[in-house]
Image (cartoon, rainbow, N blue to C red; front, side, top):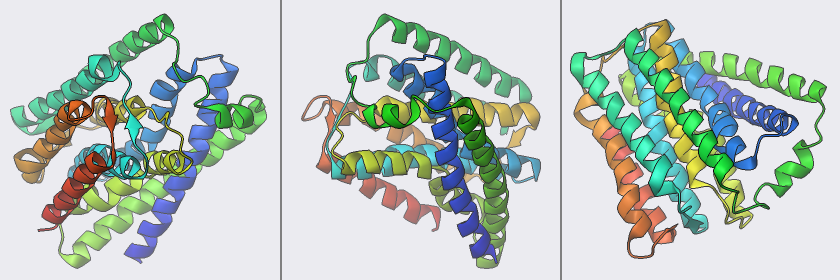
Length: 317
């Protein structure tokens, strides 16, 4: 039954994430938000909702290691698995603004999470509030920067525009309700199935959360990126995935900690996996500039994917 709950939970997360993204984008068009702001804020937050519900559900049930492992594993998966596979399928161009703003912010949030946890082994309510406040500051700066610059790829969301720019408010509300319902039950059943599976296999909750659950909650980002790559759409915004990682740390862990403090249960969180997270974040800098500047090609994607396979192997060792 644990495997059944995991499969059903993952399926509902995929369905819920899809409906939530569609409703969010549709609403954004109604509110006349720019494509850049839509991608870096609304869509990034929408695709982080599975992580939010899974982490919140786990923390409230007393499984802090699942709450932390889900976010850390999901952020690693976004960079190594999603970017790696996408770059293998199709070379990705890196926006010139990426290394000036979004990448440093992601590294700072990741480093801030490590320092908060290593201090006393607990992500407190105060630290959760600081994370949420920092996210608000980031969003304000992001929107201000977006208003000063025009999107360089006007046609990158043509398919989305055609289907969602004229969506009615009624349909947006229906999509939102379907997405929220699917995400709620999906997160609940995924946590239930994962904890049962970990117990039956003698594997720690943290190992399951940083692999199976993390990949499951990264499915919206993975599906969107792979589909775009298969359609040969070069304008895949690296900033969207980085934005999702920022939301995962600041909003998911920040909001969860604000409701209930998150305790470090498994020593591997601080001893190894936080260093994997920081390492994958920092390695984007040399990969972005060497040897070909401002692009992630197939061999760079293979490096990221191979490193992720090593990470998965060590998580179960």
